[in-house]
Image (cartoon, rainbow, N blue to C red; front, side):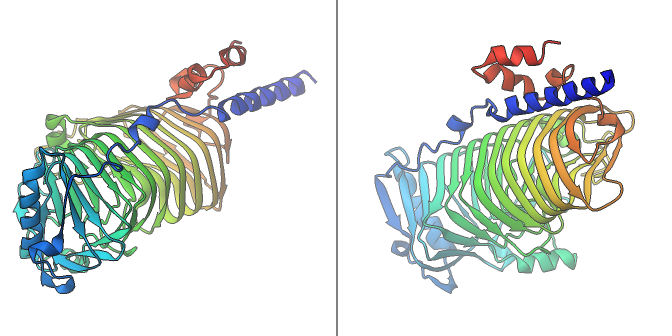
Length: 470
């Protein structure tokens, strides 16, 4: 009878704790970070791409027209900025540069088409945090829409389209006939105040949207599509960037929908620019070969303060993945992922510590990543093959991994497979693996990222104090 009463009390205790937390929104600066400050701003100067001789027939190459238009608009950068309007039509172009204080605006039926001639995508130096091209030693092709050292850049429109026509690049990749690493569709480097919104991105040759070494980036209301078998067509990849907001996006590609990165092995460690303060909200999508949200595998500069909520992935290989390896170094810490719905996903949560691709032979195999304080809360899943495949690195520390209120309908007999990790769980079904079985409450909630913040951010602290007092 005593044991029955104790069990009932513990169950009521956990339910009260869960109910308490379910009414609290995590306390981050999401509202200010995700608020667009420049979208309503009217640029005092505006031109149309046709004024510079562009022809929207899908055949005429318009690279010079884009370059000349932007060169002209640069004279207004210190006069309130300018807007380049792309009207309805199919505008074939090679790579072109953006400038500061610019709005690139695509009309509803405007389509910017990437040239299928590699000569129209110049080769540039590799990123210093990678040390070489990501696919091949040496340089890399520049993205179709490119900018560096910019301030106040907006790429938007009335749901126009930017189509990389990436199939030719995918074929060169598959046939191993590339001379340099494939280009991204949009890449902005060392820039601040970037807004990308209300557009559709199609068929990127490589990663689709790549802000690298950037601050204050907003990506909102975009659709990103590529065939499910297209190689490495990631959706949005914040790379060594901070204060990034991604929300209200639909992504269906051949690889990770979102992948947070920060440099590769010794080059990323030396460059030492982390990705941090990243918010992901209201993301929907699917893929066949990648994940919904990935961290890594290039994470050697560090990744921290990542907040993701209201996520829906379906018919996908993996829900959430952490990718790392010996030699990566760096860290992944303070990650909070909540309100996730998964349908028809092979593996819900995956820690893969065997991404053993390295830039060269000079990496340090004894440089181990620090993985700590990762919280998964309020996750439901239907038709899931594996709940969690959580593999740390022997001799390393993957600690304070916390699972709270997770319910997955798993179709295999071994739902969890864990090794070399440590953490806690509460209200998880099916029952989690042995290294995570210790309860979060009452002793370990402070070890779980953002759970104490829930308590402090609530206006009802007295209610919380008795829940955690005994």
